[in-house]
Length: 127
Image (cartoon, rainbow, N blue to C red; front, side):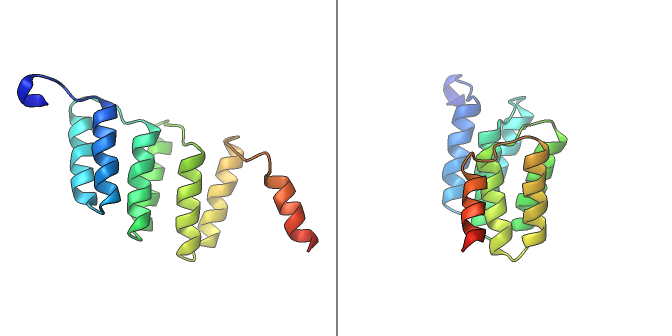
C-alpha cells in the first residue's frame, strides 16, 4: 500500500492486528500497532480489544491487563467486549479477585452491565 502512496488507516491496521493476533503472532501485531501510533493514527477500542484478546488467548493475562490499564489511562472508553474478554481471561487464570474488581469498575463507569444480568444472578442464587 505504502509503495503506491496509499496510507493505511485505522481499519487497515486493525485488520492486520486482528489477523496476526488470531495466528498467535503477537509481536508482529504489536509492531504494526506501534507503527500505526508512530504515524499518528489513533487506535480505537476495537483495535485494543483485538490485542487484549490475543494476549489472553496465549495466557499473557498480565500484558492484557497492562493494555487495559493503558486504555483507561488514556481516556479510551472500554466496551462490553473489553470487559468480557479480560474478565474471562482473569477467571480462567484463577484471578477471580481481579476479575471482580474489573466488574466493579464496569459498574462504576456505568458500562454495559447486561440487562439480563440481575435476573441471571437472582436465578442462580435461587437454586
